[in-house]
Length: 280
Ligand SMILES: O=P(O)(O)OC[C@@H](O)[C@@H](O)c1c[nH]c2ccccc12
Image (cartoon, rainbow, N blue to C red; front, side):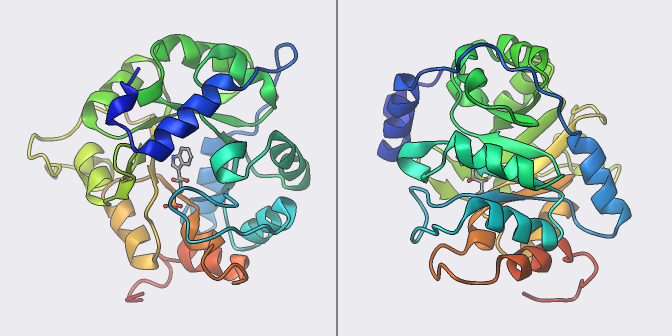
């Protein structure tokens, strides 16, 4: 969908690698664990709904964390994560389909497959409860959303601006992630979610940052703020802007040190609304 020339070189390289990867053997048939149910359970339990991401490294990470993905995922769930995201992209994130399968067998929360799926046959590589589709990189978004659902996946459509948000809604997406990271420059700005998503979701009547009134995202669409969330204050900021859930990788994986306590890193964020007043 997007002309690669506008993208950061690392993203262009990721897409080239994705285009070269083969699909799966046959069509998967998934019995998916419900993300909305998992998010509601976290809310009922007083936890901020966080999707914690098993991301060994990335083009923007300060290092690589090679811990066993199952141990990482179990530590994230112990820290209150409502769901787990697992990178399966091998060339730039050190992810794998095998890691996702092992994680999904080891935890009972929904697991998202985080990869650059550009065509339908790329869906059949591995079973997961949710499948990421990045609006910017696919042409027939409506067709891929339908194809994902036919396999039993819950599609998570990722957007970065309001035009992509509208495309996602028009394509029938019921779970939308707003990526605060611009894949053209690989820079992250939390203002992205605040300007793209509807403020009215949590505080009705407020105009959103665009000043153009309440957005038209249907109330039954789950809105997820992705990327750049690193503190309880960031969590509260995204929730006040309307996020139903948050997708967090680096702040939990803590690639730079490579050995910090993943459970504690997760708990700091899932308890952000019960420890309000924390300045961290
Ligand atoms: O590490 P962060 O800033 O917490 O970001 C997590 C997640 O949002 C990010 O890894 C991500 C968002 N969309 C993606 C698409 C592909 C690969 C990775 C991603």
